Structures are given as C-alpha cells and as structure tokens.
Length: 157
Image 1 (tube, rainbow, N blue to C red):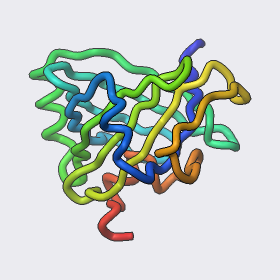
Image 2 (image 1 turned 90 degrees about the horizontal axis):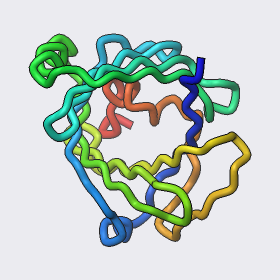
Image 3 (image 1 turned 180 degrees about the horizontal axis):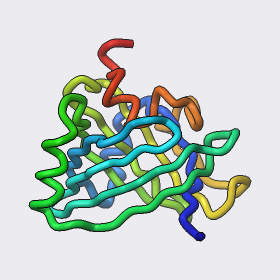
C-alpha cells in the first residue's frame, strides 16, 4: 500500500515566509479520533471537505500511513460538528523553496502564536533547502501534531 507520508516539521521564527508565499488558504479541522496511533481528521479547506486517517509514525516520526479522500462540503460540516471542542483554526501558506513546497501553518484561537512548517519528502534522507525563517526541528514531537494541539493547545503550554 503506497499511502506513506514522509515529512519533516519545524518551528518558524519570523513572518518573512508570508512575503514568499505563492498561495494561502484557511483551514478548519477537527478530530473524530485523536489517538497518536491513529487519528481520524475532518477538514474544510476553502470550500472543500476532506476525511483523513493517519497512522502511528515510525521511530523518527518522519514516516507514517496517511489516507485522505475529498468529501462533500455539507458532509464535512456535519462531521466537524461531531468533533466538539478543540477544533483547529489556521491559515496555511505554501512556499516554494528549491524543489520543495513548505506548508506553513499559522494557528489561531487556542493555538495562536504557534507557526509550524512542514516539508514532504520522497524519502527520509532526502536533502532540502532550509530558508532563514525556519527554526528548530520538531519532527516526531507528538505535542506539535494537530491532533494533540486540539487536546492540549499552545496557550496551555
């Protein structure tokens, strides 16, 4: 099964990335299940709905199973209503750096002040450019998973 997601995650130390963004979109997402071994996420990005299942990460936290399907917006809204408290509200910026795209999430609500960048790779040891606005790596640190931010938000750290 080719549903492996390989990504690295970093804190962002300045808002310079905003001037370099090619695209940005609002995202609201909630979790039907936020167990670190298997998260079931409902997301509305722009005017599209998605249902995503993520598995437990490998030892480094870099690689894990991910399955995602687009669903009807009204279904996503109905499922989001089941998620209850801890809904994540963020803006995602997409920035091309070298041959990769960084997805930078600026969080709001209970996670305001947190900005995290992710880069997807084709293999765990792939090299990539690191822009000046990239800070400490937090790959594999479960507290930075969106599923955990919904339960233990940044404002409570």
